[in-house]
Image 1 (cartoon, helix red, strand yellow):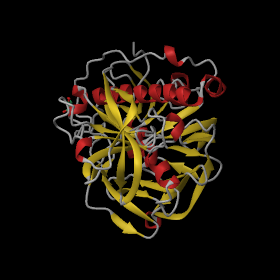
Image 2 (image 1 turned 60 degrees about the vertical axis):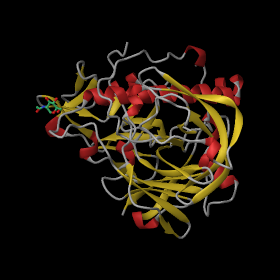
Image 3 (image 1 turned 135 degrees about the vertical axis):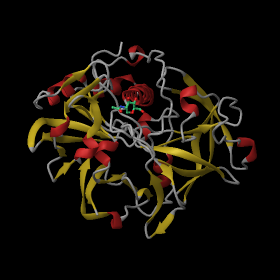
Length: 411
Ligand SMILES: *[C@@H]1O[C@H](CO)[C@@H](O)[C@H](O)[C@H]1NC(C)=O
């Protein structure tokens, strides 16, 4: 069922360290990288990669369902001609043997009055906030939100569900409450307290997730945290910035941290208004040569690698002598001693990916797994998902004011 395509993508890894650093114009949440898809001995962790791909496909399937629900079928069909969300396949129950899904960038937030704190995955590829509920009996390893202990909590109508990579689903009740991230406090923020967790999630270092994409893909059908912060006028600037690196990673809310990048930010407008941080007019380059043009890219901090449709990924690797598809590991490979230099451009600078980020480790012999993988996103074949692999190489700014994504060189 998961065919010849390759893999993955993942949620990045990180954990909170230290307390927020206050600066002019915004507040930083320190993030620390937690895991990778490469074993300590340098070989590729294929099982973890497959698990991550399934999780990612589930997320994007749900995003499209949410989008159609929020904007209506007619507008949805203009954006996604021929896509029937009622037919988007649910992921089959694939057994996952590796459950240490520790590939996320997490940081601390608090909910309620007095504050209940949670460690969440910050995800620019989805748009809802959820944490485990105090009424969840399978959520024991995680912090649980108790609305009855918060004087600002209010129960709202509706329900929320998340589908995990193994095909299981968790649902939850809907609330509004006061939410603080990095010192920025939003009132009446919609969120869900989920009442069950799959075993896959039990080992996850994150208690829940804070979606940082835009309102059209919210399953709750309400503004996500950062949009609320902008609308409530509680951030100095309507932009947040990410630095994802082996050390010194941070999410900066309400501004960008100019100490972490050099030069100015190169902004590109969002296209389609489909709720994703999706920019157009891009091209992919291989060793300096353009191999795909007029591509659209979704910048997704909740994806570990990079992904695109099977035909797009196959065409890309076709340009690399000695590359191929490894059936056992479900991944495209290239010769380990010739890691290609992959870069992207949207008409300004060319942004290159470090060889160590593109090379995910040895699969067999002289074959190494590449960080561009096949994912079934139900998106047109010119849409690429750029996750951690790309974001680790640039400073990325997400601007509501400018309706744009900006990149700058890391300092
Ligand atoms: C590398 O480590 C993994 C996981 O511990 C193991 O499965 C694999 O056999 C090791 N490979 C080599 C070549 O040592």
